[in-house]
Length: 174
Image 1 (tube, helix red, strand yellow):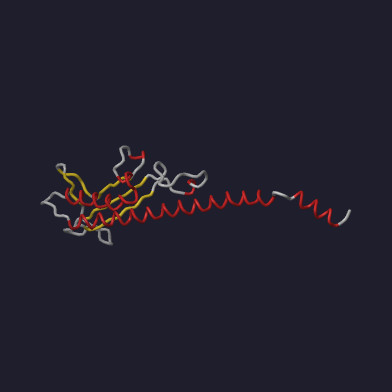
Image 2 (cartoon, rainbow, N blue to C red):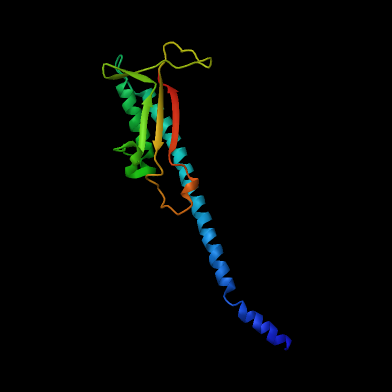
């Protein structure tokens, strides 16, 4: 056998190998890229939720409330947080009909309900004691990502993403 026939035979036996290798690498590359995009979107949503909750606290701070009734402050906080997230979540920024069903859930807390109206608790000092003549509001936003993902699921990728995206902000409103 001559050298040319051995090389020719080797070339014939390896034809199509590059295409098969490319197909394997392409699948892995697409999965990696899809994971980066999904993670980036989830992180961006978390940051927007944090910003929305802070905007809610600011709105509660400037909202006027009647004596002993902080309902206007609570409403202003929830409406402001929801409006801030409207551009990113669209229809999912509306309150979910059933909490685990998906969507955005907004809870304001640090208050008790007296005669059907929210009454906020005093803020805590760094020592953990109540700060007199203050009111604090906590806004908790939870988005149920597993039930309403904003990016189409790709098998194996969503195992690395959280099922819920959650943020809590507390601020002094008076």
